[in-house]
Image (tube, rainbow, N blue to C red; front, side, top):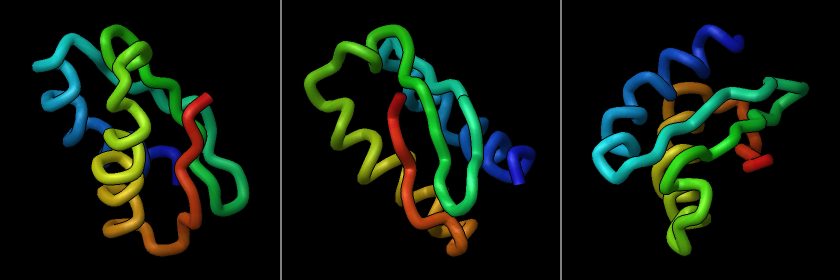
Length: 72
């Protein structure tokens, strides 16, 4: 399951990198994905919107079994 999530994150990374950020997969447990926003994304006031509308939506679209994406 981690490999699937990592593949999805690989598709999202270029958009984050354009704004000076990135995302790291921390863990996948039960039906939750734990990620860490780094660089500009870690301090951006829009990071919660990026998480919900970008990262979580992309993961849930391809992996409906995932219930939640958590920034740690």
